[in-house]
Length: 310
Image (cartoon, rainbow, N blue to C red; front, side, top):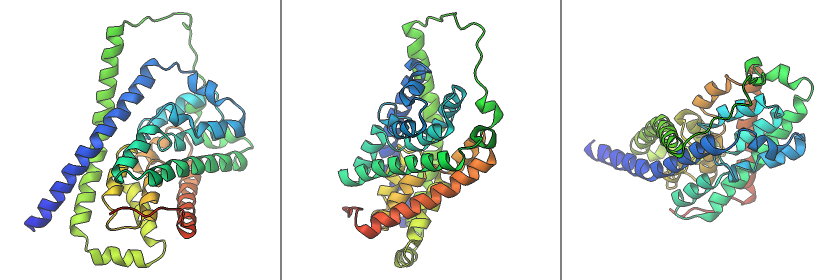
């Protein structure tokens, strides 16, 4: 019992120490965007042409890395400014995966494995664009009235838009620090919970049980997808949780874990309700689960997922 507790404690501390730095970087980048990036920058980059906009939206995270914990308020702003819903959804699903902070954290978490980091980013882009295109095709008639909350779609009206507020450098730095710290403390709670559950999981579940999962095709992938949904991890930290399971699972379930979490977990499901109607939330949830499972299965069957160093 003592050995089990010691093992779980050491694992818990190791994950927290490894992941917290990347989370802090992500929060700082998000705060810089919030404080210094004009509201109309992203809509201008994306444009209003649906197909081209979807393809571009999937890559915006390279320039503006934002984790999924902060993505929903950004989506609300984009929709209020008239960004087509399929483009906004693509942006929402892609940015938490297709960004340099997540790529680097995945690279480090998997022992400097460039292949698995690149595959995660490429898969995130492909799946986000695919789901955006499907949304465009399926909800092309009356899309906003069917799936967008009315308060999320109403455009901002400003009666004093000509007033320019000049912020001093000192006040900007203060706001930047405050926003970064607030974001970090809010997200850190989910990391602690996730790391704790993973530590208990690793130290208490019999290896024979996990061996049985491996022997049933697809079952371990579904298991890790469910774990990603429950753990509510930040995309800048989830790779460290996945990386700790390399001795227990093959690469396919770990990739599925890192793809599902940034797109769909418990906290996101609740946050989506502030923007989308239940019809779209249900459709998105089912589409994400099916798409990730099929995509990872295809990659695994065709041998595109690299072996991991254990």
